[in-house]
Image (cartoon, rainbow, N blue to C red; front, side):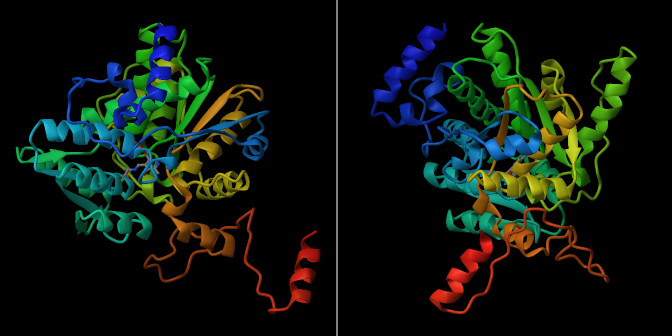
Length: 412
Ligand code: F0G
């Protein structure tokens, strides 16, 4: 089976067909679409698996690889799912696609809807989305609706809209999104030459990504392409960690022999994190994600704002960069190593979900030393900024050769 898989892969590398160049559509045999479907593509997928030696040392590992989904056409992992979802939207004759978003889903939907001739309408929590992501949706021509409320309120509205037959829902409750996003698992295993990593660690927000990766690995196992699942672990930001909280109670129950998935997830009413992509208190795909993690023997944990910020700067020192939500993975790996859940020499892959330029303001404030959880908020007393352990503030120098040489000397 592997031989046949790789033979088809080799043929597709040589093909000029845009479907064969897409990191989603070259796995057509694994997807619920006909050969002559009206494929939508922007050359999504095909993202690199990068060695990150400084981040590895930071985590206490001998090596660490990062699968960087930020190399996708709109700069986030959402594009693999949108290629599939918008293809299905065209098949079903939809005219308008709608999503709630913290920014990336919106940017991706807007681009893929524009490609497929559909109208995109996106619901964003007003004032809580990075301007880079908002700018993308505007540029791709979407109808941008800013809601007074958080992501969870936008998501509730989208669910209410789902009974309108004219409207196509593009959030990850849409199973075609998950189908597109599961292809990352296939691409990753190819890049690992089918040697299953011990651990795969992803950020968690609305939980579509972890559910999709879990599905992808499971399908490879069911086909006999791999002989075990990698341990899939999910990392949330401390102020927006409903599933990590639930997982901690499950872990206790598990010891008592009870592995049941509960009916209900206690939401976080007012989620808080500067990693705005994952500022979510009531994730819709939590059950699917939890099932995938339990099946794979992974963990669901949370990390602090300081840990996210420092991990992000460390990833930058590897010359890689990512948006804040993505850095939860490296922060999470560090925690799991410290807790003995990951061994120093284990083969670990962290998934980076978004490009560094998705949130430049965060980076500037980190390096200036002005990053604080409530910056921009309405508090009377400005909150204490937290220390940027790897701060790299710009230095102002006179416009002379001597001053520049003196600065270089000072840096040695
Ligand atoms: N990382 C980034 C950069 C994201 O944009 C998101 C989710 C996640 C991680 C979490 O992934 O939701 O599948 O668990 N962003 C959504 C959005 C919510 O609207 O762009 P998840």
